[in-house]
Each structure stands twice: as C-alpha cells, then as structure tokens.
Image (tube, rainbow, N blue to C red; front, side, top):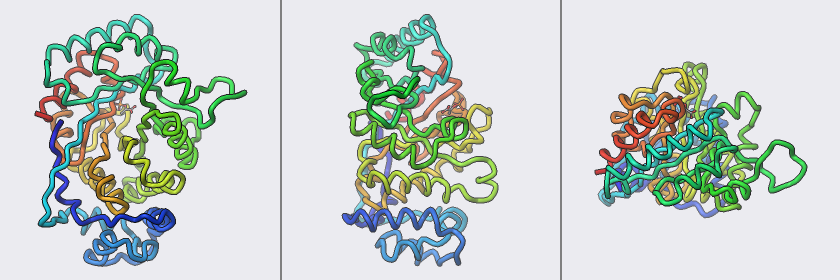
Length: 339
Ligand code: PEP
C-alpha cells in the first residue's frame, strides 16, 4: 500500500447527500463551458461549498487548468489516505491459449520473486473473452485478478455476440473495463451507454474500470477538463457519485493510446488531480479512496515517473501488457513506488 497524499483535497468536498444537487453540479462542470471565467477564489469556494453549481461551474476546465487549478488547496487537517496501486493489462483483440499460459506463468513467477512487497499492488489482466476462463484458472492461486474488456448493459437474452457481467463472473472475472476509447470511437458507445454498463457491472458485483479521456483535437482546444467532466458526470447522473467508492477510473488521453505518445507526468497529474477534485466536490472520502489509473503508451521506461505522481494510482496498459517482461517491469515500478 502506498501513501498518496490527499492533503490538497481536505476541505474540498462538502458531502452532498442530495443526488439532484450532485448531478446538477456535475452537469455544470460538463455543460457550462461557454460563460465568463470566474475568479480563482470563486471557483474554489464553489467547489468547496457546492453552492449554485451550474452557474458557478462556468468554464471550470480552463479556470482549473490554466490559471487556478495547479495551486494546492490545503487544510490544517492533514491526513494521508492509502490507495493500493493497480496495474491492469488490456490485451485487446490479441492473445492465444499458448500466449495466455506463458504470460500468466511469467507474471506469477515475477511477482513471487518480489516476495511480500508484491502485495502492495493489485494486478489485473483483461484478456479477450475467449481466454477469460483460462486466464482465471491460471492465476487462481495468485494475487492476480482478471476481467473482461467490455460487457453488455443487459443481463441476458437475444443479443448475439454480447457477454453480460454475470457471465464474466461465471468465467472467474472480478473486473471489467467499460468505456474504453476504442469502444467509444469504433463502436459508438456514448457516455450514457458507458454509464449503464458501469451500473450493470456494479449490480453484478464486478468492479468497473471506467475509461475516460480526450482526443487530440479536444486537448488542443483546451477541452480536456470539460470532456472528462462530461464523461464522469454522465456516470454520476445515472448511478450517483457513490459508484466511485468501488469503481476504478482510468484516465486515458485518446491521443496517447497505442501511438507511442505519452502524456508527460505533469500533464497526466494535472488531469488526474482535476478528476479527483471533481469527486471531492461530491464527497472527499470518495475522492481520497478512488483509484485513478493512467493509460496511454505506458512502458517500462516512462512508468516510474508517471506512477510517482500524487494522483496517479496505477496504469492501464495495452501494448506493453502483451509482453510479460515489459508488463512485469511496470508492476515492479509500481511495487517500488509503493514501498
Ligand atoms: C489501452 O488500450 O488502454 C492502452 C493504454 O493502450 P497502449 O498502452 O498500447 O497505449
């Protein structure tokens, strides 16, 4: 377990027990980006108090990133929250029975050599659905967990080709990705579909890893915070902020996925912190506890710097998760950071 300081969140969030207010505020973050930018003080006070959320959330993205956001918000009540890092592999449409057997074996052996320290992190494998049962059997006596790359929002029925959350559990999975950018862009999944899938996962007791992130165009237009705010707000609107007591978030800038381009540690930290502050505006305990992973060309050489960031609690790894040596090297970096 690694202490990630959340001092900057203290005093940020007032518990909002009224779901309508909570939803409105999240919608405000997302939708009202075309108004006058409020002062830093107003912006922060509104985040702290939740007062007049829709009006006050005007231009929250640029207010937070460009001028106001980087300043930490501190409080005399210092407390340190422990968040266990998660290193998750997304195999996408890759892999075979033989590859799964050998990769799981290598990984189990690597983690064994790390000894007790390995328990400082959680390791998750998301193979294609055809390999889920096999992977789950291969990792059965280890700390590794497995999950699917997607689920259907419905429980069963005439939906050829789909798999449900309960089927994933039946195959030995404990987690599922939802809203991966490839699902959003190639298969037309909207924020609302992703929210319904998140809800379906939680109903079945599957931990959702909710993927969010902006495209290159959106980043260039300085819309990063508006986009991730909109994606989070859709889930809060549908399921309530409480889902983030259990769900994991993966922030994956789309322009960094599979491209070899990586967000700098500072860029990633800035967005992770923004996401955590969105959660803190709902409930500071949820914000402190929620794991926010970074994804987008994470490799053994850039993982240590990314994982060292205060608000980065692990990684969602695509390409490098297909190679046991690389994937284990990223796990080892997380173990090291968690020491
Ligand atoms: C991903 O698919 O979630 C991902 C981050 O891919 P890559 O590591 O290859 O960029």
